[in-house]
Length: 467
Image (cartoon, rainbow, N blue to C red; front, side, top):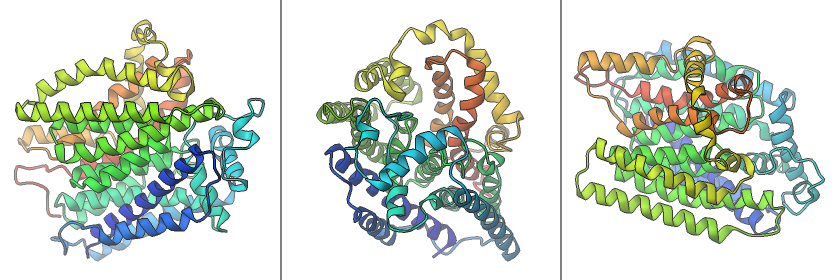
């Protein structure tokens, strides 16, 4: 088996195990019961079965990398991952969100993996970001209850992100040298290994979300429905931002007319969305009422509408402009449904509670776009991550080379208006502070996606370069 094939199987296995913890754990917590410790070995077994039965791309590699480059790339990635592992294990989280929103919940769930305790049920007990998803704290808590170092999840996420870029390049037919170059460049991106808030060893949920989105990008570029479904499911349960990111992926597949990927992405989003929103309401309402059936019914209805509309557009052989118009017409309805499902409170609800807020803040849009360009291109924290896609797009246009993975391209482009919406909809009035504290982490989420897209694009009419 090729190295890229091995990396792909590891990704499928790890995502499968993590998704099993999220799905099974959420069901136990929503049932107001204690999550049993045996969920961890069962999840690992399911992940191993998925990895063993997953069919990878063609092998052996058509153009293996030079041994010197293999060892250099391996030494670089292993060294960086070791540094991240040391940073993760040497101290608890060193930044505010990591300490109060993630580590504290991990400690509480490690002592008692249940919501039926004062930390989650008593309004007088301080609980920062009460409605944040509990997948990461629960997973770390279960690992630590088994006597293992749970914070190794963070360096593992770094490895998986790099593996996704490597596998995406090889799936696209790139030679070993080129694949290693892109994977190593992704690994050394300054923002990924920085010690501040949002970095991979900071304890935040952003690192794992970035790895999950990179796995989704590999699934889209390599047309792997299983990987797309797993990544969408985990993203929605990992962080509040994961739910709109997953919805964007569904929209990107719909714009590309890619029904093969749209169906698993939509199905996974419906299930994960019902679980995530039900958990959000349960945490905010202190377990007094259950909204599972409302969330499940609404998610199923939206999913059926998406698939039905795609089938209608496919029968009409609708081109991209037509699909884009339909998407823009459906956008207000989607926002209204999200506002109804999330309510006026919580991490998502406060953004969509006031529909007039973006209209009053439209004058901020130029400043937001300039900040995105500044942090993405000029600050240096992201290196070539967001510069290279622009350079490759211009080179393709000049060489008249056809790009690949249109759904992945659409997903990356749709992220820009979503970043803008995050600041136009936010209840925070201090725009400069909000941009400085939040924008770098939003960009970090998409590092793996950007590198996967760059690694899979041909630069000539003949297709990807062999070396």
